[in-house]
Length: 134
Length: 189
Image 1 (cartoon, rainbow over the protein chains, first blue to last red):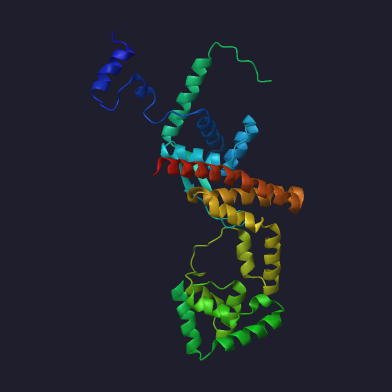
Image 2 (cartoon, rainbow over the protein chains, first blue to last red):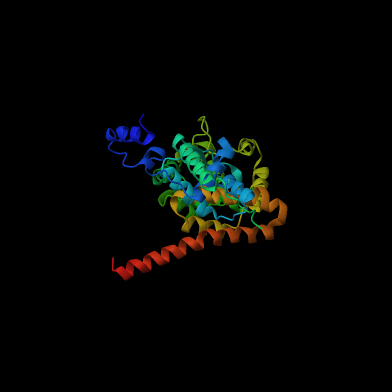
């Protein structure tokens, strides 16, 4: 009986873009760092109402980590370039000085990247005793 | 915009009015309304007609009165069609404003100025932030300012908070740009 790896090797011969085992699990360009994980989790939590200020407040409230709006928008841009998020401009409002709000939503690739990276962290931490931060 | 200005000029000339006539008439309107914002000096009228400067709503009112046309006709010259289904702003208060008297509009304007963040800070953000994030980022700061900081802490503390946001958002970007331009010069590119 062929192993998963052997089956993978047969498959990879037909797909020249797949050059390693990792490409099956995580397609090229979809690796995400810790900050990007936090952004995607915040977008997931907020659902349809996700926008810059809301995402920032969610991250600050849940992690206690202080982030600047510029760093957040740079992170959102990177994720959008990678195809993990999509955005659109909402209607301008008076409380925003007549400026439009940019809303964000996760794409299918974003969900895949997030679940894969979180599972990777979980597998790495499995069996370890992680003390609660003081 | 300059097209709108030339149409305004053509309309004035068609009515046989000089710039001095418009100035004098607007001065009468300003005195009647006890508000100098309605006054349209010759220099300003020239700016509207030849330099593409857009008149304020008070001066639009004065021009409409002097030229005996509807204010909406002047808005149309600048591409704003109030009969269209699309609205520029979603805020419900905008619909109410159209039915208010001029005095109430003026008071509303004063209230809006009282809740507005420091203008100099807004200009700095507009000038120095990357174009892509500008609208969303400034909008976020302004929204936080108006909805949570100003009502809770008052105008002075809210202004301090706003300037702190301006510095936080601008300084890292400026520093990076300085470093990047220094490296460019060093490499001679």
